[in-house]
Length: 301
Ligand code: FES
Image 1 (cartoon, protein in one colour):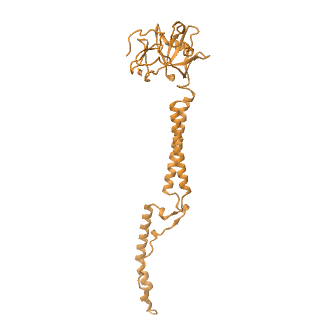
Image 2 (cartoon, protein in one colour; image 1 turned 45 degrees about the vertical axis):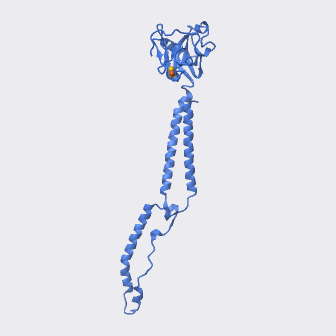
């Protein structure tokens, strides 16, 4: 499993934890909710209630004297009663806005807090669903192919045709495998005593018919990991970062690199296609005996 896959899985796990936390808080709040009272109303609603109550009180005060006067008008048959009815009451009328009135949930509907909690939950759910889908879509091709797995580089015969321009080798790059493909005469494995590849038959494939096999070398410099380009003029690979140089077979020639370029296991399947196993990497020490001449022309760097 690649580092990117692990990172994405951790990210999904973290998102799931946050989501679970939000759900737990929302459930707890819902379970512990008390019946709603006037105190739960927001300030704006309370202010409006008070304004309405004040208006109602003002209207009552304006109509009260007339009715009181009418009721208290002395009749000819009860002259003494007018004195007791005209006395104003000293107790202030109760302010309805200050009374605590219990409002049940059905009457009140959805509170602002509930609305925001539900909106937050919906947004998080949507975000996590999208994130999960995109993560799966991103990882899906990696599970079936790509770097770290076996990569099909195409027909070996087609590759071999492109590898030579007369006597000059033209290394072929396979992006999906991050690899350079170069030709390698099989006889060199036996002929060059002390070469780096003796005992590693998996690093060369093909060549049963014409004696020319191929190698797949990781394009990553073994010094600090820069991508190493080919140099056609010198017939080798030259790292632009700190100047390490390798010959056409990726054997160390110069610079701070501690070993040869790393290479992958290769094989040719029944369909005649070159399969590069990027999950199997071979590291080889600096060559005691080189299998290629270097340089064969001017350096590129
Ligand atoms: S990274 Fe290639 S020489 Fe340093």
